[in-house]
Image (cartoon, rainbow, N blue to C red; front, side, top):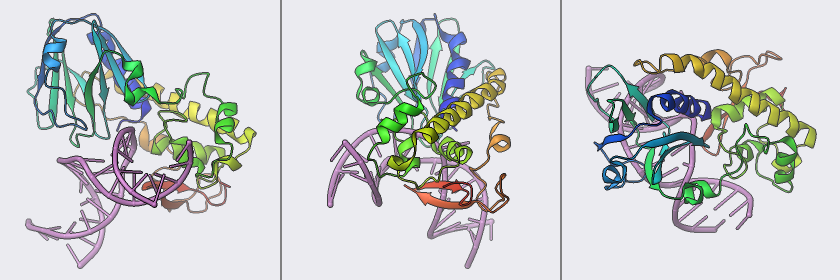
Length: 270
DNA sequence: CTACGAACCTGCCTGC
DNA sequence: TGCAGGCAGGTTCGTA
């Protein structure tokens, strides 16, 4: 579930419930995530106030008085505000209880997510080498074009490289390339400045549009549902292999590139 | 530096 | 029904 819009939606969902509140208790039911959850995290957090819930790439940064918890949702994680007093279920690995009774619950079936502690998150190895945020001014067509000089790697792999730009996952890479008419296998260094400008705009549009639609999810965030409704409707390429291209009606190709499903139109994308 | 494959996990769907 | 196999929205790590 978590592409960047989902993570941002999660951040916006939890922030108003948690910011400014002190931790009553952190409960770790299963510490076996992508990396082990630090054993001393409950002691580290006890009594500390959550000052701000931020996001960098697909990481949530829970900034407390004396340090920051880096939360990643992996491929199957979710973080919910629990208001119905329900009991934890299978894969509910971590609970963060605030002293006013607000409860954050982390669920992650595949355990690809993480909860890590850092006193200097900006210098943390997981964050230090990340490229710019896709919705920032720093991310532009000129930037992409400059970074791509001499690169033979397929433009899709290039776009999904976190050192180039963060937060463009498989779905949005497929969508942005389709919208721009760029073949995913084209060498990154052989895409013109003009087309990188279009690609950059397509990435921004797709991501911010999905965040806006995530707002629908946001409203019932405290309820149990949480499934994003925007997926099936707005996707033009991803998940449509073999189906007619919305531009030319020819069937879309589906291949694997770097072990990721890649969908494109061999007529419209060059 | 770049590029590629393997690895970390569970759940779900397909086909025999 | 059961079971093997493949696949999944992410990211790091090791090796060439």
